[in-house]
Structure formats: C-alpha cells, structure tokens
Image: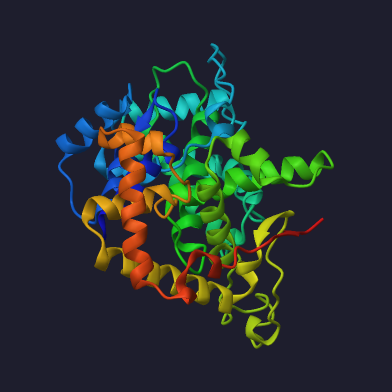
Length: 378
C-alpha cells in the first residue's frame, strides 16, 4: 500500500467515525488494522484516537467484540422502560413479571432450568424481530429460520449479561442483542461478498435517506444527501459502488424456493437490484469504461511516480485531487508544507513541465471521460 493510499484511509477515518463523543475501541482498531495492513498495539490506537480528539473511548471485552459493530440509531434511541413492583404471573410467558422472576432464579440462585425457560418463553420476541429483517434494506440470503437461530443466540447472550439490578425491562434490553446478532449474521454470511461493517452501515444510511426522499416525492440528490449525512462525495460514490457491485448479488446456485430445489436462480437471472431510486454513475453499467478509466489513471500515476521527486509527487497528487478527488488550493498546500502559495505554484509548474516532456497526448487529463450521472428507479 502506497503512502497516498494510507493517507487517504486515515483521512477517511474521521468521516467513518464522526461522533467524537463516543467511539468503539475495537471498531477503530479493526479499521486501522485494515488500513495499515498490520497488527497494532492498543496503546498506539489509543494515542491515535486521543490526538484526533475522541473524548470517550468505549472498550468491550474481546470475547464480545463481535456484538458491538453497528451504531444503530433506532436501537440506541429506544425508550427504556422502568421496572415496577409487580406480582409474578407464572401463567403469562414472556411477560415482564415472569422474566424478572426467572432472571432472579438464574442469576441469584444459578438455576439452569430458569435459563432454558427464559429462552423458550421469549421466542415470540425473537420471531417478531427476525420477521422485520426477512426483507431487509439490502438483499441477503438468510432464511427466516436462519434469522431466528441467530436471534436466539442474541437472546441467550442477553440473558447471561442482563443486570437484574438495573432499572430496565428485560425485553427492551434483549431486543438490542437480538437485533445486533441478526444484523451481524446478515453482514457476515448473508451476502455473497462480505462487506466491512462500517461500509455496510454507510450504505444503509444512504439508502434510508434516499427512501425518505422518495416518501416525500423528491428525486435523490447526491449533494443534499451528502450534506444531510455529513459525508463527502467520494464516500458516497464508494458506498454506491459497493451497493451496486456486491449488495445486489445473489448466488446463481441458490434454489428458487424451498419447495422447488430442482431450479436454481441461474436459470432466471435478473438485473434488478435497487429497491429505491438513487444516483448512479454511468460507469456502474459500463465495465469497459471502468477498465479504460483505471488504465488511464494507472498510467498517469506511474508517470508521476517515475519522473517526479517525492515532494513534487505529493503536491501534484493533492493539487489535482488524485488522493481524495478533492483538488487542493495553493493556499492549502502552502500551509501544509510551510511555504508560500507562490512557492507551491512554482513547484507545480516545474513538475508539470517535467510531465509534459514524458507524457503523450493520449494520457493527458482530457482523456478522462467523466461519466454523466444516471437516476435509477422512480
């Protein structure tokens, strides 16, 4: 991985983890490990987060780090209901009084039978949550039974971790764990290609915003959605590429239905993969254009890397937006390198003269066919 790729990854860190009042330590460490492609010491990660100004670093036991991968607003904003002294009603399975009684038996008296009863009597809650994710925002390949199985695992973890001294209803607490486990299963095994959690969540946020626009009779606008979600156009475009290339995929070996296991989807290939209207570049639907763009970009990168000094390379890459698709001004680069804007202009001009002598007319910037945006759906 080149310096510029690492620099871009680290620059996007604050775009992915926007809430500086709370950040999950394991999520941050996983992102940095993937960006730098090496194992990182916890102290290094903590220092990195402190330098960036993250005030509250949430640490989770490593055995449970697979449970806290998503920042789900609808879960975190749920109303927490207080406990009330109520007579235990044993004939009301899954009720608050019954759960309270069984939880006390399990946590205080350590009765394993109480644990089994809690699982059985709260299965209706698992089924209810699982049914909501059967037709999720993105396509997935998990059946209802798969979702129920994962939800049951989440329920069992909720039972073991519930604090009986906390003034919270168990069912409200359990929903968080059930949802978390189901969503993690969809991300890990429900798609043909596994998508990183932070990118999966970015795609979901964009699709929710597009869906909201649709409900209000508005055509999706990339600029407006980026401002609304606080993301850059490059992050938006990357999320759209992930959605189009991976989240609409289904294995062609998958059966059409459980009843008909003689016919696979390969016999009925459909290209429709978008539930909501959105903004997509023409290149999404034109593989030859993608190859052509990548070839031109690669040749330009090679020419710059082979014939310019390191400082000249960095200035050219930043000046013309090769790093993050955002061209930098002379003033911005002057502040970064500690020189005047005139000095940056001189270095840029000298570098361009060098490139002009090396590059053919076929590789100049005009050969980039910047695609027109296409609105899909509606």
